[in-house]
Amino acid sequence: MTKDSLRELYVDELKDLYSAEKQLTKALPKMAKAATSPDLKSGFENHLEQTEGHVERLEEIFGMLEERPGGKKCVGMEGLIKEGSEMMDEDFSQDVLDAALIAAAQRVEHYEIAAYGTVAAYADLLGESEHASLLRQTLEEEKDTDRKLTELSEDINVSAEADSSGKQNVRRKPRKVA
Image 1 (spheres, rainbow, N blue to C red):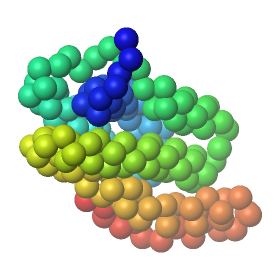
Image 2: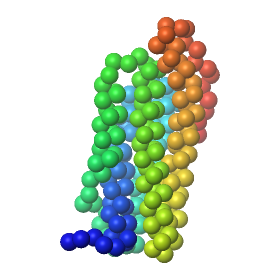
Image 3: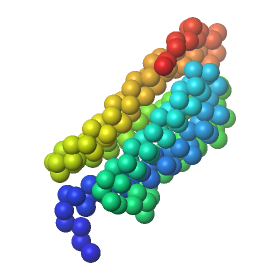
Image 4: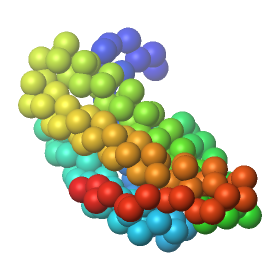
């Protein structure tokens, strides 16, 4: 059966996001365990809690739509997580591994930012203002996580470069990233 309405596309995209978030709830603990920077480890742990909230928001939207959230696998997220897992299997020094984990996490965040922006726009067009509000709340959290990862990378990447060039570790005093 051909899907020929924006509403059907909207529901399909929400299912894709739901799958993405559920996959991420399984990947984030592994990333936290692999991280060597205490701030990065804490950031992944905090993002896990936030991601569980994203799942709950999506479930709330599915309830309003009287739809089931499952039934679709997000192959985009599956690929991003696989790439991140491959990085964790590499024999990187600690700082280089942390830099790689940040890179993988930012790819995930950018994917989610694009997806949530799209479904929020669909919700607006469909007159689903309550959905749009929930989706934009998640979108802002994803953008905030991306900003925090960028802040962490400023020090971690410098240390990773120092590791690579054999220079003395020059990591600055860690900043608290809330």
